[in-house]
Image 1 (tube, helix red, strand yellow):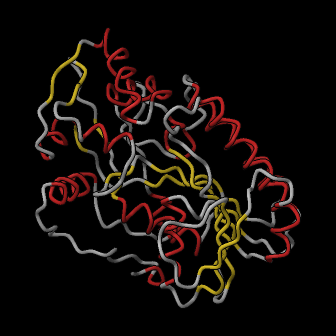
Image 2 (image 1 turned 180 degrees about the vertical axis):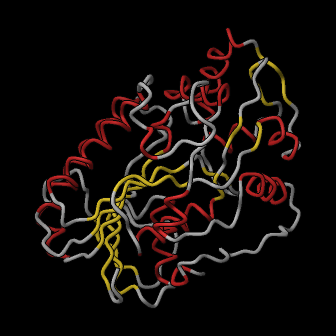
Length: 338
């Protein structure tokens, strides 16, 4: 993105939308930052202009062109359902919001790039998968769960938009599950259980993404978007058993035949009641993603590998000062340093 470019963040009140805005604010090469959401961000932002609007409303097609953005970042896709909210309602929110935002982008003549915060869960978890999946492998495996199909549907909308508007760089970021102190998501809640249930006979290889790298990679892609899907994942992987040992959590083995019942029973607490099948498969087979495009094309160098993210999480959760640098350390994209 050229110096002084204007960035619009859809879903700025979400955790990742707010963190992106805060990171871009520290970058003198970024011009105006405008955040769109139905409610203001919970964090203090110094130079981000907030605009109250609902991207599900067709009026967004009149608002967005007038803002004349160079880059639009879609952080408004909701992956984890709120308590009491059925997955069908979540699906409708995501689909309607995405379609209306794309319709607005189509009318925005200034737009040069569209960046989407997506999910690596589109790959699913299967024993036949390679250790590290590349971006072109998403269509090699069937979309088995409703969650996967939802992700596939949303990616399909952006793929079609990108083909119809070749002058706009559409970048779909496939994030692995994030891990970090203070984060509230199904993985951190799972690790917060006093005794963690695991599936007997399975020790999956996992790839937790440090929260600082999640924000850093999103900022890097905003400044240097590339066309197509990009995995956002750390180097290496870590076994579930080692992750639990580092976290100091005792585990109890559960026969696979009843694991789905256990996960469904915990679903309300984990915030993933409608994702129990995805969680069961992940905790049985794991999932790893190749990050070559993130490093070489977007130019982002991750600060934490998988084990480093696990160690930093365990250290900070136990109240011990981290040995890793904070705030966010080095990256080849110098303009996003904190």
